[in-house]
Image 1 (cartoon, rainbow, N blue to C red):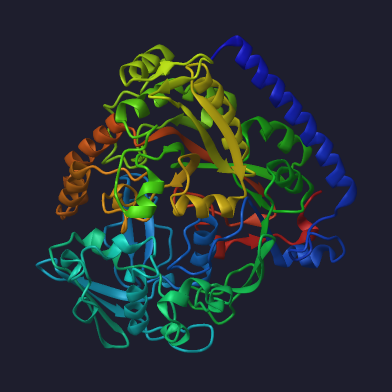
Image 2: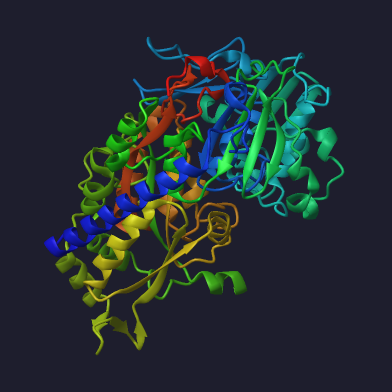
Length: 600
């Protein structure tokens, strides 16, 4: 990065810092501590003692597990709905353990295994010797919040919803091994059997490793008795989406869309128990500086993704705040539409995108972006270069032989020239009369991505690419992304801890609902299938090594950096345990210290 560029960014950082302290003073002078989620002063310590307030960048898209796809939705769905199994990531091995009430997939490594099995609906399971079926025995003491029992039929009903092409759930790939899927249509009558209310059988058309069988058959259920009369074409817009019926430690109390979601502890839940904190408010605060100021003044208790440069001032201003880190599970990336999305939407035909359809062009774009400058300027020691979507935390599968693509504008220019892109009269590259010009979209309120996008814009402009920036409200942005309406964008992924990437990279674009780029590679599809044939996940390592080499070569997206997530916590929270599974990994076990014991 040039000295001039560093000075410009440093000046922007100083300005942002001044704006933060000005806004902080405004918040200090105009608002008191939170009172049960409203953010207004007046109820004092008792309200503080009973309500946890979490500031979010954006609202949930759905509180329906079949439809929800945002991180916020996932966090809240996990508190409202029951789970067939509990899962826990073993940091020593990089493998996921699955836990039923009376059974575990693997022996627990010393120092691991803190997750209680009492949150699981399954008492136990049995994998067939030929690995073509798995049978669960369910508890008979779990109930939906309306008093109806949670039964095996709820799972069969829900899997039909997940697999319905009209509903178009993003999780259709989870059904890819069920009987009939190889012929294009799951035979649900044979693939999922429910001999009685506490027996649930999944049947596969081929042998499936036990860990993947557990992963793919543990999608979150909906209550069949509530949803059975909703037609598939009405499912996404049903009023029931606004009044979710769950069985978990919390239930929905109130949802003011684009403002806040309020959960209340479910006093009768035994999955695993009622949440310790009576009420949790997820408050939508799109602006990072406002979120930070509210944490500092005590208006909120948790803020995710604190900028490292703000640590010192934050902790100095309020000694009742702590910053915790966890990673590496989340990465940011720049997405390039590999195919002409407009043509695909109109005709279903796959044609290369006129700008980003060439792997060599995408490699040039990666080489033109100074990823280290973004890390040094924003993430500092909390970021590392990302090569592919297999995290270094997945030690058994990570390919440490891959050398990151270096920042090299000269090489990038040479690649673009070789692909026919030459400077025009205005200095912007052009090819066959088309300028290399596009809009890079991202979501509002994400200071990190806003920072990175400015550097990316400057980097690309220096090699003759016109990159305009546009910020969209978070829900609008992610809806446009899911509908494949964007040509270039900056977003992030929180990876699954089981490597199962066909929903992101699978060549069947109708089933791979998270394949926003339209990338297609038959060898990648084949490697994913070969890996699934290994009964021991570590036996699939050679396939995942090659998988990473292909992604590194083809650059369907520009992988930017892995992040150690930096989360701000009020010290009045007790019992929190952060790990790679998520910030809210054990939120139902959190407690709030009485206000009399909180030093201000």
